[in-house]
Length: 118
Image (cartoon, rainbow, N blue to C red; front, side, top):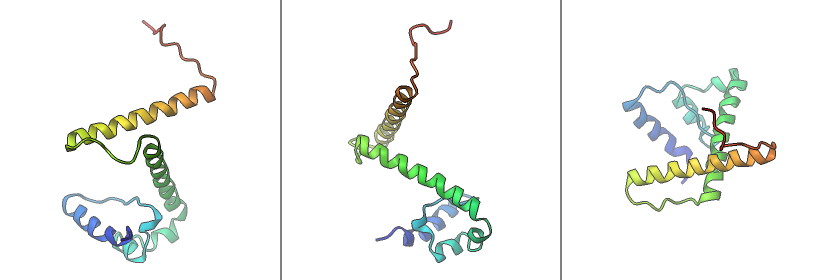
């Protein structure tokens, strides 16, 4: 099924254990019911720039997640939760290194690791 109907139960379950000060979600969750649920019915209309800024941040996160999945695969091979978390963190580190290396070449940066400051 769609993501939007799952939002309400997830929000309610989260509120049982945490104080929710704000919600950041992509536009797939912006149904009238979901917006009313988090008391944001008029927030979008009155604060459109701030709302869109939050959407943009979420979009950046989604794009990064998609890039990591394209580069390193969508599945985790590890079986237990600790190993899965470590595998995911390793993918994130590897992805960040590819971004740094890309930017080094793009901007003509030639690092000198052999002559570290003492």
